[in-house]
Image (cartoon, rainbow, N blue to C red; front, side):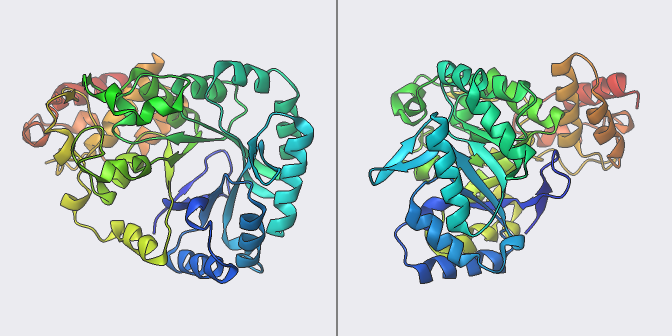
Length: 383
């Protein structure tokens, strides 16, 4: 297992492969404990708890008893339980009661990440960030009831507005190759509608690209939901592309997006957890999502670096994907942010070392003019 830092929280490092809570639901207390034991054995230390189900909270609290310090807990603010069912709420009293109930049932006095629950609409965004709800969330952080403040969303326009406030440390966002082709919208169901993909798309949606690059540049961590599109990405029949990806290609795609620190997987068994963590021993070919993307007729990624690493090995040892990532971040900003300059400097080799042999361009499945990009990186960064 590998870990990535929540950059705005110096001491929070999360496993690249994490767990959503849906795989726990319906199990006995012993089942919760078995699932949690296996997660720890595999090095998984991060879980998202979007559900307000009191049974989940109590059983999971029992599963982590005595080892709270070993796990990074992400709970949601505004996810409540009322009349025996889930309720998304912006009512402060209901949100407070639900949050306090969560801590009590989990047997802890804080969450590592408090996630403002499910904000896709602009009206909802304005209500939250222009009223008492955000003040309540900030108060939780100030008193240490949460260590970091997050927000979950499926809409890149709303998500960008949220992170631009400077208040959001972590963004939970729906990421996969299909969703990244879709234009923004307030109706999450559009992401699951096959009709919306039939016309095909040319390159990734610019709103999503801008969001990912902003988060990378500003140190806002993205943890990914819908990595497998609810399982649709794994089926040729159900995939919006009409082509099946495997689990490792989906994970690799997400982990190579700017800003991403972790992918949340809804594992329903210890066997599924073991399979996903097999990502680290899988072959490069098994993880190579470019094998799928580059062969699609209706979905064109030509000329755009997808950070797939297919250009390697570079004759001079340049990590071309990382150079392109920092180059794109700077071009989007219209200058070189200090953080990006620092990351670029730490690379073992830089764009200016390119000898223009063209080996990388022959390997690139997306027709990226890599030599020109290396020259541009040298121009912008100075070496």
